[in-house]
Length: 201
Image (cartoon, rainbow, N blue to C red; front, top):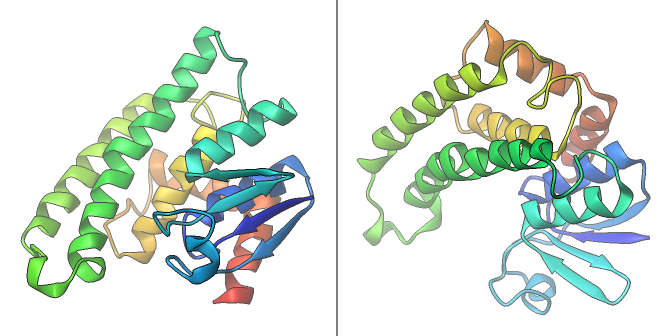
């Protein structure tokens, strides 16, 4: 059985969602970032950490990609054009959407107050809005990033949209992005993940 270490209110949510989609059993230790439990496994103190047998894996996107590859689901095969396009969506999500969210968070409550740059948060919101416009264009007519196939790219993008909603970034009330996010939130695995988030809040 897999073991996820990290509070579900963090990027650990992505790993929980992935395992719920895969239907694989897991144990959850909702340890906080930089706690003794986490620091003993990951020198950065970051969550999530995944334990798979003797292996200790870090970084949420790497973990999700590993699980998808290992189980042959939620992904296209490595070396295919489809996989390159899937990875393109993932990298876009990390670079553009999560980049704006993470920079805003660091300058809101993570960095020491004396080094925060509050003015940069306006830039983050602008970059995020531009990213949503690009995502809308790239999504096309398919229900998911890769058309009819739900992949780990959707987990990353969905988690960013959820993070934006929690952080009170502007999200469209209707239209393609709103419809896409609604489809993701209706998935049974997402609902099961949100139940874990609520249980440990």
